[in-house]
Length: 168
Image: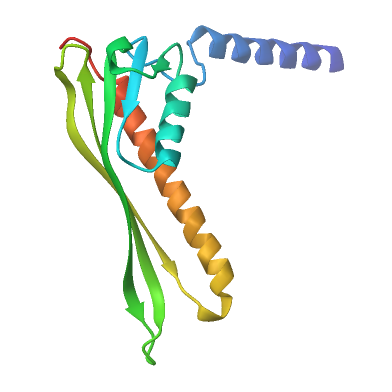
C-alpha cells in the first residue's frame, strides 16, 4: 500500500510539473526596447539621467550612445521636478502631514526627427506624516520617498519605451 501511494504521489507531481512546462509559463523578464541604440538627453539632474541610462542598458540589447547622430532614437527628458506641500496642520499650527509629488516629462524622437512618443507627462505622489521631534529620521524618509517615486516614474517611462514603434 505504501509503495502504491508513493508511486501515485510521484505520478501526480510529474503531471503537475509537465503541465506548468507545457503551458508556456515563465517569469516575465525585461522586455527589450525596439531599437538597438538610444541617446538620452536632458537638462535635468544627472542622477535621474544615470538611472534611465542604467535601466535602458539592463533592458536587453539596446546600447546607450553619447551622440544623437549615432542613435536610432533619442530620449529627451524635457523636465523633472519635485514638490513638497503641506496638507495637514495640528491644532497648534505645526505641520502634521506632507504631500510629496514628483513629475517627469519626456519624448522619444526617431533618427529622422519624427516623434515616436509625443511629449508625455508622468507624475506620482506620496503622503507622509511629520513629527518635529524626529526631524532627522523624517528627512531620511523624505529622501527615500523621492528615490522610490523617481524609480517608479522611470519604470513607467520604460514601459512606454518598450511599446514604442520605430518608424511609425
